[in-house]
Length: 316
Image 1 (cartoon, rainbow, N blue to C red):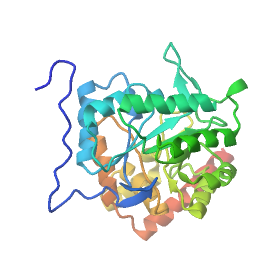
Image 2: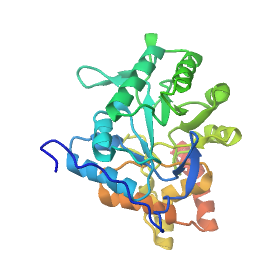
Image 3: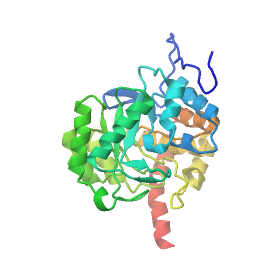
Image 4: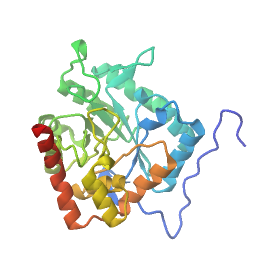
């Protein structure tokens, strides 16, 4: 029995002769095998999301085979929710966090790029999640949009940041080092560190980071696109609103969001998706995208899509 303010202890699915299939199959991440469709926790921080709904959503994801959850202490209460919903954690669950920003006393988000700040954020994530090691920590560089841009003493040498995260990995605080919002040149620069993954803005209709993805292929690094279906940013068109995506969805009996996610999975075999949602139905829809198989003609049409959108914007 639980008391007010407590949550029932989470019990992962019991082993059986028919284990839950990994959504989208599996791929390696920081020395572990994870489902190619994971879950991004950021939307759980929205003020209109009921706490009990958030806890149930996290459990729904894990029971469906998700074992890669993306979070960050600077998102807000996400780590607290994850701990309340899932601890004691399933053995195969990889908790991936992000550092490089922090909340101020007023709740605003600001840069935190200096090495000592990165270390403090890792410690804060460990404490909030109640673990001795984070499966993965992504360094969010603030050189370019989207989001806040580093200025003044927050413009920090990239190698100094990598050295700090490498030291934390060597100390056993983190299992792997990832990068977020980086250039192809920065990925090449970080190769000696042994980067586990890259998180950049990328979708079927916005492929400005294609050169970075090409370098991930060259270095055999996992690709974890953020905003894989677009976002609330005014400059980001939603994938599900594109007519080509909608037409293909109607042809194959899938939803437009599933088509956008399935294309990502088909584009690189080490792509790992972390679509976020606060809606149980949308979570089920995203997880089911792992069963969608796009015909070759549909993939070809989607491969041409970003170029046609870019051309239309240039001509307008």
